[in-house]
Image (tube, rainbow, N blue to C red; front, top):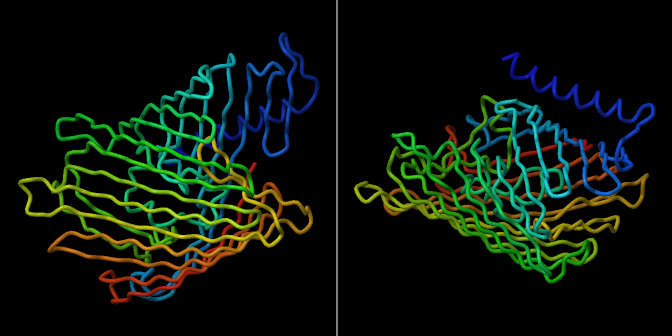
Length: 414
């Protein structure tokens, strides 16, 4: 146990020591001059843009209080935990090679979240190889630092493999041209291993059209497709219903929308649609996902279909617009204009998920999320969300079909 965490803290200490030494005393080089930036982390780059090094990270401290279907017995429970504690390093070498490394310090299992090398010589097309999260959907493309709600929509749980690397490896090509962004990746996750030890691949494709692609003036359309070659799936689909804290509490309830049936399924496909619009401080976004899990021909089960969607409306009371990046097809941070007041954002989200298997199940969850975000400055964000859930054919041990949640987050980004 100690060795897992000590390695993470050793890396943190080394990085901080490097940053301290870099900012103190006299720096001399035998090549191009250096530019050092310390606002929002540490960034060092040569003036000829051939070499760079950037150190950053995030700390997200969460508190959830929940009842009803969110707890096993329906009584009120709560969780206080580190949602994320990450150290992130990235940079460039020899002008055309890039590297990215993200370390998970909140649980350190595994310690390495992402680690990949990229070739940048065919700008605006980038090739990457290593461990990274696949590209599928607008909300998943947006960093957890700058998503609007504390947790992403339950769509991410209907087909979690489309966005998770599962400790495996992969290759990806992505690029932008005019108003278009696209990516294609081939992943080999560790969970796709069959009884003979042979792994299968996951394929992800994403295409984005954004005729308007600047902060406060966004029109975004996206199409996603993913296929998993796993030939021995149990077909299980679970949901936290928008509250991570149910997994951090012994009385938390994370129900099955579709239970395990060992070895009953062997085909898995997902289709996703995206839409977003922003005008000044107003932003709208919505996504739809459909997943089809095919039953084996010799199985007594039927195909499972999982469908879900969400719609979100957000408005910045202080007038700032949400950032947007066409490279990646994603929303970015809100930058407060008033250094004393910060930026204040209100939002509402509705999302619905359904899983069906003919003759066996038809389960539905509906969530309402109301929230406020305070961007105190470029580094600190404080969030409060209220969630209300209602389910059909899904309950806890006490038979509850409804539940309420209050979630809070304090975030520091560097």
